[in-house]
Image 1 (cartoon, helix red, strand yellow):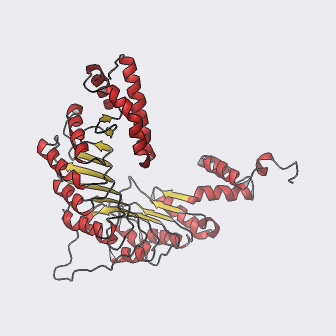
Image 2 (cartoon, helix red, strand yellow; image 1 turned 135 degrees about the vertical axis):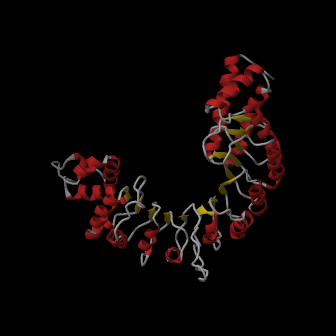
Image 3 (tube, rainbow, N blue to C red; image 1 turned 45 degrees about the vertical axis):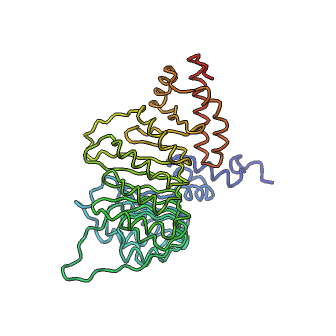
Length: 421
């Protein structure tokens, strides 16, 4: 039993004290360091566990502390360098800057997450001779090089990998030999984000669950990319997100051929001149959808490159589109269409689709539709419990959305005093 003169807070279990310190603001944590050795240890652990360094000066100061204090370095689990508004091209760092960061990295014995989110190719030098036995997540804006791949192969436990979304556009020296990079070996990789040109980094994986692919300056053939993606991950891949110029019908057709078992698909179309999708485009999508036998969520988004378009949302047309797509792909439960400001449509009973009533556009459309009595709302409402049971195997947020739609629809019907059998 602890003496009565010991303060009450010091009698609390260590886990509770640690949680209290974690929730304190950084200024308070710095003050806590002065209370006692125990509280200093708790505060240091909370301050240094997840480091995010937002300028070169802060990075240098922090890295010097880590290099000189091994006990502080031992508590670091996540190390991130991210300079959002620092012009590295106009003021390149000195070589000593990279040496200071590299020395600090070598002292992080239990690092689990490493994020180098700066567009600086010289950061690849930090990875030389760096080994982190516990590393699980690595994010960077580097393009694949022999140095980067060598580093990755030293960390076979990585399950999340992000590389540059841009292609390596540097041309090899005139008359020089084409560089052949070593093969990447990441047997536990589950999540990948990067440019389609970097698809070779995941060719040896067989457990990939999600892939986020981009095409920019170089339009790598989707056939080659998706064939490589599906070669070892067709059975495991659940989510695919693609960002590419154009309307990407060829990309969607390739997806439906090589990875038709995915659960979620997100297509972002980069357009120089924004416009609504044509009827021919919508029908072409409908023709490919029956191949996607397990697809539950499908979102098509348009990115107005010059931000000069003024395309408005047409929910009546969107309602017809989601109804046709839903009939073509019975497994679909959620659809997002271009220019709808993030509005999602949800399948309810049978092939009945309604927009999210918590979205302003969805609420307006539902109110007008109920007032016009354009659908058999009573029948739809009665069918919702069965729909919710059928969706029980889906992610919890989907079930919550269906329950929310049922509640809102019930309110709309009662407020409008409409009873439709």
